[in-house]
Length: 211
Image (tube, rainbow, N blue to C red):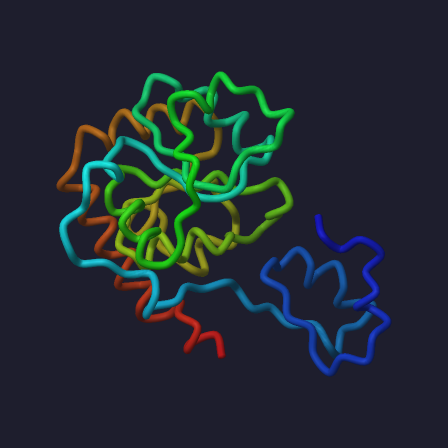
């Protein structure tokens, strides 16, 4: 989505790292000696919080990020839930119906993002369509924080987390709503998944591991 004219392909870099295996397969026959796969990760020193969670962060479902049309289109199907949507102000053209009850008018980072994610029963991570095979940084942050996460299924997940044990995926709106209903009613099972995801993230998905 951000390649533009892809000037990097003609620049004198020694190495090029991409988070999506799709990009690797696309470029390996053109600049094969330079292209390497490197997934995103999380900051174990910043994305953590162990105190009490204030009521302002508590909700059924949360996410944090940009109000792009792909994300809002999905969340509009979930108006029956108590949702907190953390992020910078939405664009002026964005329909305001969804935003009225869920928009927090505030972006969260680092420790505050941990509070927001831990305060929610479910962190819903709907990936942008340009994440062809890969996961976004939020997937690793939510796991490292120790939050329970529902995320769009992608093939690469199986190499990064165990679906059903460390993270829960969904494949369409119907699947998502069914899983939201189930997991909201099972807090103990949510915690087991969240704890396992955190252990996996701490073991394999920090900046130290990537470097």
